[in-house]
Length: 456
Image (cartoon, rainbow, N blue to C red; front, side):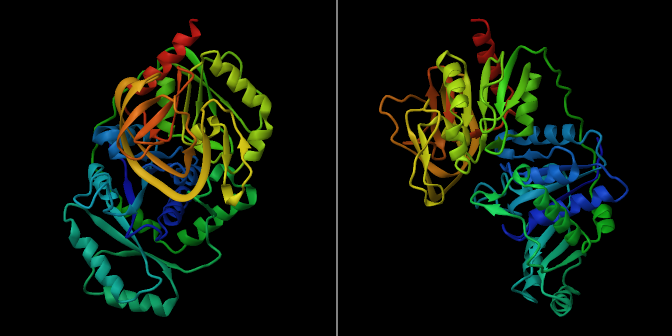
């Protein structure tokens, strides 16, 4: 398979990668109606929602730690079917990966796996001639990586741009393909875990995303970026047949629960699941004729008052789980299954949740952000080794002493004492760890658990 591709990377976090990547995607889609397939390097649920919004194609994550090299290649090739060009937004700084020893799981690593050229975004806000030294260092750091273009962001004006371009002349042979002027009005709305997910934004703020993308895109040479795109041949992904539907799984999807890898949902469908989406915020009860429940991550703390008021949904979920129905909750899903959530924006009142996990959730100012690895021995996934990640500003408190855990953490923090994966009523799991279903046995085992329940 051969498809033009480009990686939008940053010198560091916070240089405007997402804004630039969204602008490039938006501009390519406008230009001749190109079908743009977006990707995000690393374990991120929020940035891909912006990609999906502007391209109208589902953004996919590319993470070497969770998916492996072949998983990254399979995902890329599979997602690019029918696309004209692929745009991959990086994570953190270009070479930032799992450690300082090498570039494993970094943007650079993924770019080399895909044989994709890189456009480097540099924040020029507080420098001039020093920008040349920074870029020169990046160009020379890894000769196996092709940095094909530079975008200067947060440039104060023509005079500032002149200082930088004069400094680059004769020293940097890579072309500058964009000089983006500073504009305090161009800002995407943020919250404690980063940008606010695009599905939560109302129409006015969605229009602001498009306006920001257009403002930035107008200062980037999109024709040059198209010419820089790599087109080397990648072998086709294996054809994955979809099995006949075996079970119906209710998947929570609304303002509070929307952190799902699209690949995970696709993997469940291939394993034979019919996915039925529902809202713990807005709907009164679970969908009918289901055999399992999935509660993804998200922001249950933000709408905890509405979740608490929706007692009919809480009773519906409790009844199903206490009857033995398998339930799988990740991060926000875990929080919803505890007795209560308190502490968001300093609120002292504890909001009552489902109470299927004998513990409470406390929102904190401490960020937990790690790649994770665990040995699992429990319901749903059985005995296996898991790789994933954790990303939250909360802790699980007052955990009952007789609670059972399915995950023994080898890397990462988990819930408490290097343990994660609380067992829910003997047949379910609730964990901080987010998993990727590139490991096909995970969706298969979740489906098998639901199928066993359906035969009762």
